[in-house]
Length: 425
Ligand code: ARG
Image (tube, rainbow, N blue to C red; front, side, top):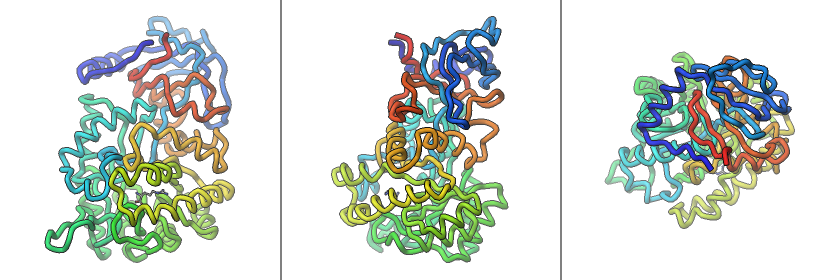
């Protein structure tokens, strides 16, 4: 078995080589994610980190190209996750999080970025990190210092005093406040501007209480409609999309009215809000795997008892609303909240999405072309099409038949550079 385990130095050398070289991925079955079909025995030609052509095996005339045998594996566009926290660890929850410095979180981020990439996820939205650690992590990855996915960083999540995006664990004397806390329309606009200034490429805010925060209520809206409108208007004016954390029905409805781009969790979304989201083209990013982790391993990881109680209600309801959303034809993203559970297991959510009403093709679409649309990156990623970035993964069995193939990815290429190749025996 050949394993491309790379040090930072060889990664740099390889990315430089990949940029100059032409590569031919030969003898694979290429999945057309938009149609949900398989192009049997096809080759992919890659030049300067982008897909040059996709064609029948042996027809691309790739003389001089470095050939990589795909051994009859199924090729897909690199997967993406619309909701991760690379700087968070799944074994450090609740009060344990107070012991983690921003620098220490960034170091975890380096390890978690590599795990995520090796799992086949070549692009992620990082929806919240302390001290803009995700912006720095992105910079280290983009410069070739460390391996990892393409990151769309949110920096500090914006939220009300005492809300889900605040830090509520310490008593009054410590004056502990989350970096993204703001109250009032102008304060909220200022936070958006600050996030943009320090490198955020998407704005994340908390529009309701949450499961893992102390003292917040799932159903309670956070921020007034006026504040949400100001936030969204400011972000859009600056060219940034907006992702709202929202579980409860009222907060979801207000966020839709304010014009957000994606609703994270969407747990208790009503039929009426489903219709409104569909009408406005708003994506639902529903993390329906994570509940199993929280209820199974959360207590040992330090998750607060009150959070476990909230999860018992939210987890089940969210899966039912996911099913309703799929039936209604809502735009579905693939977002998992990795970081709450263990990084690199993002692919586990596919089977849950299929169990709760999607076809494997739908679930794969969500994680590829769907997310690409949500990220505003449709011309660059999301399908194996000439001109797009060569972010390509492969699995040995057909994921359109068994989506669990995506839990263990055998080949990973990002921007034309190979990071994993377990296909060659
Ligand atoms: N970060 C989210 C929160 O604390 C996690 C929610 C997880 N539960 C779920 N059923 N999706 O609210």
